[in-house]
Image 1: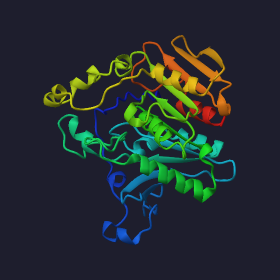
Image 2 (image 1 turned 45 degrees about the vertical axis):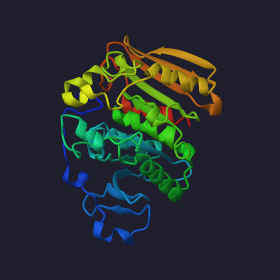
Image 3 (image 1 turned 120 degrees about the horizontal axis):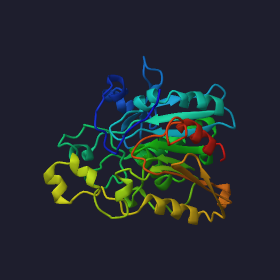
Length: 331
């Protein structure tokens, strides 16, 4: 059965989950908990709440391999806009099988509703889960960087795992979040794999430091084809309330193309060698190697492909889980 995930930065359906959306810490007793305290759900053992130092109680799902040791790595798996960690967990069960085989701790953070959610479909705040690039913006008021940084540091300290072995991946808005972690929390993350997701100056692009980078894009992605213009993608006007669309007050614009983003990090890492590989008739992989710190940079580009995830059975020609672990196992 094909697993084609047709997602955009804004999801066209909203699916809530009572356990997934709940805050597990007792808010009335929150002052009794130490910062970075983790509480497990009494029924759903994979779901946890994490108390950020700023007082936010954030949820995440956790998979730990059987034999955690000095070779174990950490991978943050970030969901799409309006999605949840549970949806990602359920949709790609092979991720956990691969994580067991390759000795990875998987952390699936949950996004948090913020003021951006009210911009879409004219809904109130709380409609979806948006990953925030710049919490100083009025429409984006959740501090995801503190959540990512402190959660990564907590597990790095618990298991004595180096930040150099801590990575982030994601789909669509989750791809944006993967860039965000590596650009604004470089001391805790050392690699991003963004599938059908971009990045923005508000998310810290271009970062001072470089990192291993994998990108997967389609040339007919409605966001991809409008990038570099510094304007709101036309697809947004299909569901953005008219008064907001015409006001021009919001910052969802793409000033840099994904190719320019990729080229920036290739150049910054002083990569010396490239190889072009045809995956399918439509999918071309460009691999850059001989980079500083033994980093590599991979970019898949699929002609005629939209905002959709690839499978082995279609012109994408790759399995998401296989590619992710093959890439991060190099570092």
